[in-house]
Amino acid sequence: MKIKHSIYTLALAGIAFGMASCGASGDHPGYEYAPQMYNSVAYEPLTQIVNEEEGSWLSTREDGKGEFFNSNINNPHRMNMREPVEGTVPRTKDGSLPYRLKAFELEEAATIPNPVELSDQVIAQGKVLYQQYCSTCHGPNGEGDGKAGEVVGGVANLKGGAYIDLPEGHIFHVIMKGKGRMGAHGSQISQERIWKIVHYVKQEIQKQ
Image 1 (tube, rainbow, N blue to C red):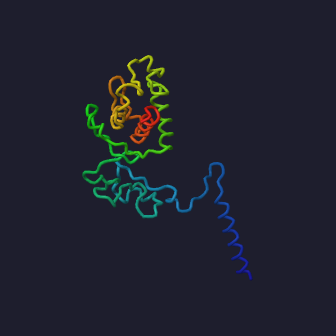
Image 2: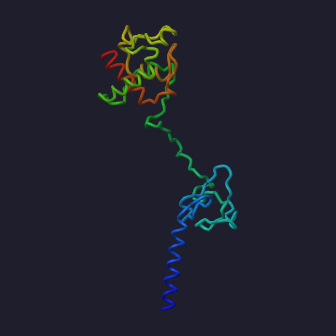
């Protein structure tokens, strides 16, 4: 009976200690189970320590290596990131390829079709974007009478003259690369958003 009682006592003490260790108060952060799950090994790109024994006196790592070892042994040349495949072309956040045409290549740009499918939702989004980026100069109705346009002067009236018949690719290119007094907006607006603005200009402002 004494042995059985001692076992129960030790078990209860162990449970009590376990419950107490889960708490944190004051300067005591509590105890962590499997600390490597919370504090992952940080691989440094420029200051790699390749000696697997470095910091072994301090190590709590589950892989048995030294605490200061931070080199990735799984990639060639101990690189922490692989280089892209030769010839890889990066895409923008919206999945578009980088726009390669130069500002003077307007004729070629004019042949580019609008890749964004036309819908009521796209028109609504284009309207919001137009108000944010374009109406200051071109005015709410595209007539070149925006507050900034009155100061700058020479702002295009999108409802008049040859502007009515401009291809969508032309309008896109001018927004991206700029033309005349209009500055380039390609660094401020994504390609997908510019195409939505183009849809709004053609469908609602120019009624094409």
